[in-house]
Length: 547
Image (cartoon, rainbow, N blue to C red; front, side, top):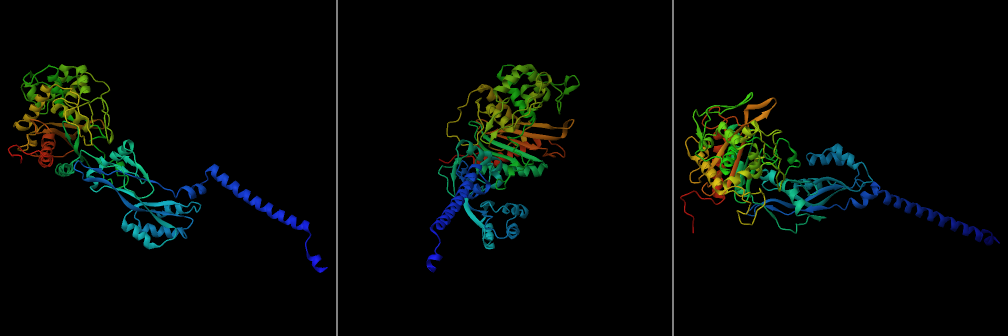
């Protein structure tokens, strides 16, 4: 009786089992509903937990100079991340990490670690071995390392403007690095893996690059200039074997390419370059049969345009031939040549030389030419001697190469070309090019030539000076100039073109106050040629070549 009384009725047992099953079913439905909601809405915690730990970066090809010397490469580095859900004390982590990792803001790190629903947050990418060891020694829970490629630049600022930079994911954001992403493409990797593709080979010669940058640095100190730039280009192919703009940028420093005080003056800015454009004006007159080197022009009086006058810095006091207009750098003479040709002919010639339309290189678009709003009359005259038309130095260098290479167009390139030289379109008569080479050489060898300080024994340098006042508020600034020298060597058969510009020099050689290009940019060019010619395999005349 007693046992029978203690046993629950069968109906009661069934009800209890049904209640348990129903509760379990409701719980499972709730879990399924929550998972579905997160999947559809892309909720932060679910996404972070499942995806943010799968982080990809990119392996990049090496960048090397024309001789195979490394300018940029990937190395395996430790990157630090945290799992906020595992971090025990975010204040302790923020405080200790900010001590061992310079530049890490403790306040920002606390905010990153505050969301414990997140399972992955980057703290610092690409740690040095010493930094990684210091973090490891802290022994803080919730911190881990990930091995991934880090971009490094062994020669630093020497090629900063050229190679550009990458972002923390190793994607190119400036310079040649961006060009690689846009053309060659990258390989996504989940760890530190070497690239499968071969290196990107530049036309750049590291030895010549060092010499050019070093001479520009010395020139800035010697002449108290605020900036300097130079490009050395193969006049036959357009290959850029050296290019420097000072102040330089260090690609190993994040964000360096954004510094407005360190622009790439060769490509990203346009400037009135002054009398070096007279070489183009003389070439135009010779090319179209308007003049010969011996034709004479009366430059004894200034040219008047309303309230404006064009006059020479050092009036010759006598008529000048076209040859002397070039050698004495006569503004009046160049203006007369331009006016004789006329605006239409000048526009056609400048367009043929590639100076009126934007160009680009592997570093991206070159700053487009700044043309006058109205191009006629006085504009035709002033542009003839280098005022009123603003150009990127690199674009002018490409046009100058045509003047000395026999008349063939070249496209500036930072990449090494394997094709034969002299394949560009012929846009200038060979006789015109020969005449300009003659004038450029005379400008360096003759006692009254403005470029005589560029002479280098044995290398037959030729060139043209240019000094242009820089624009400012209310007009041009008389004491703030860009002094430039465009030259080539060896002048009997030019192989390399050199364009040097000094920004706001305060002095020049042989005078207490002169700031014209013949006193500073010309000797800098001579110093550069002296150093780079042997590096580039050009021996001075009179030295036999070993069999």
